[in-house]
Image (cartoon, rainbow over all chains, first blue to last red; front, top):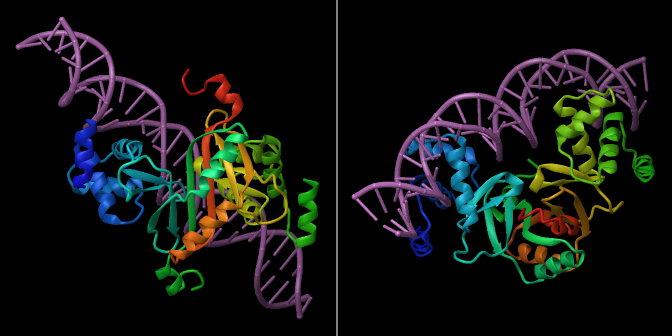
Length: 144
Length: 144
DNA sequence: GCATAATTGTAATGTTATAACAGTTCGGCT
DNA sequence: AGCCGAACTGTTATAACATTACAATTATGC
């Protein structure tokens, strides 16, 4: 959080109350949260809590790399790999909804190039693995 | 379509009217369609058209590899790489919403292994590139 | 034929996301 | 200091996507 505040100073970004509240919630959760869960949090903090408030805060956080959207869940996680606008892969546990962020290994670059060869301009690459984390696999969340 | 019918015979799958209508719509469209667009199509064909009808047909088609869900769009495309339950990558044009399916190149396997090493069991891998196809890049859909 | 599993029809509801617009605050400029 | 335009806020309303639940029907195996 301190790091984030520092980066905002540096890049002259405005970390407004709603944005900070949302980011805090994500940082504390260690899991993906939906916009509406975040709205609950905003309400708890006495901040305005109509949907656009959450979506605007999330747009800001995602745009500046402080958070990521997990397409599979229509939900959001705090970025755990500070700084650069990196491409990333996510391990999404369908048992407990935790999301681990994995720096995108070099091989994937090859894919981006392959795609470009098909004359497609890649602007964003989404890589999400759905499955079970160690804990949930153990607990047998799949075949109850 | 004939191929699909053949595979259903072979695997004793029931290609019911709703399922066939949805698949036909997807095959003709050559682009991603949402469940509600497909419902419109079902209505046009005189078939029932409540949301669950479309979602059930789509569940069936996706489960058996006849279609894929594009997470980025909350939409669906026909599978263009018949047969096997392959992992695939998708090139999603934000200009015209067309989706090209690209067989997932070998390197990605490495990623799945990397993930497994983190003791995460991968059940499904989503790879979606968002960007512009050649035609839309040409037309300058980005900076109008 | 009869049991059981798969599928259908339908209403109601839940969840996720955006449009639109008036009002406010911020930062740069002279 | 005062003004301008850009960014941001507050709010209502509504659009778009998806599921639950349950009764009714149709296939398939024995």
